[in-house]
Length: 477
Image 1 (tube, rainbow, N blue to C red):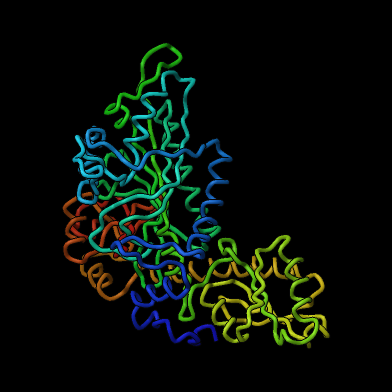
Image 2 (spheres, rainbow, N blue to C red):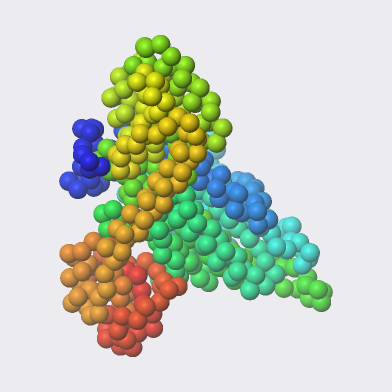
């Protein structure tokens, strides 16, 4: 059975979800703790998953004309202060460098919590004419935010991410870019991580500091909490005015550029764990798995077994990310180890299999075993990987549907928030006071105003006044 517990080192997720999550991170060897609170060691498997995400997203943005660059780690305090709303939004999380060696610095340096100000400073230097636009830049880097409470991948003092920063001639171009990137993020989650998301706009209270509008993708974890999985911001020309980023248009008149900013981070790996993992360990969707298939020899001491496994490795590796575990560990130990690390498929091959011209394929997600012919094995494995990918997405979508509820008044909203973990759909008047009341009373926040609106009554779930939007609410990581 898929739910049968095989690895005693992992706490059951239904018993203690937080402990289960930490067990997966460490036992599956995704990451380890360092001597600095909130800073992790990304172990090879954890970093390899991040590289798979990088590769997928790089293909998307490079196909649309974006270029990767790299900005400095340090931001002078005077530069950070140029955009008031922005710096106030990040002030509680900023780490400062005050000394170089034994000498106090003449000006404090911020370790980047994000790089808007650095890109703005650069754009002000290199953009003069409409011929210089658009500027479509992205960087892969680490970020430092001094979080009060940390958890591996989900909330770290230092974490890895990408941050795109673009400059455009018109407001329409900037808005198109903002939503295009949100679609890319949806594709990363849906098509690679097998995680369905809801796209929408953040409320004024929840939007990014300094942005005109923030758009988000929200996903639902196994425990019913929401994870903000990616955001895309339209800055209009607010930063351009603060930093003097102007260009001469075709009429030789000075105009301010319109900017966007967008990012996803290694918290996607945390989401991957919490959506798909089980009590046997990590479960990786095939498209994002660094190893898609592991070959386990059975009775490898018997003549011809190791050789045939090596032949299959060479054959399958042409199109499928394949690994041969030829270590001297027992097959049972290998099964549990590769299950723990989430390898989507396992191929078992022994002397009797070779004689009969077949092998056993085992799915990580369901534990289903199939006897398959060795002839045409590459095509069989590829088809099964596609099946696993689709099934994992469907199971996550079903879980989300079963844990999404509607509330039409505050009593129903409160009862749902307290008793039924998941998303809550409810109408909202648009008032900040109503939004704050929900957060204060129920520790529930407005995750987004979904693009796909539904009418769940016509009045605000909090105050009873006329509603403006249907909002997706939830408790979040």
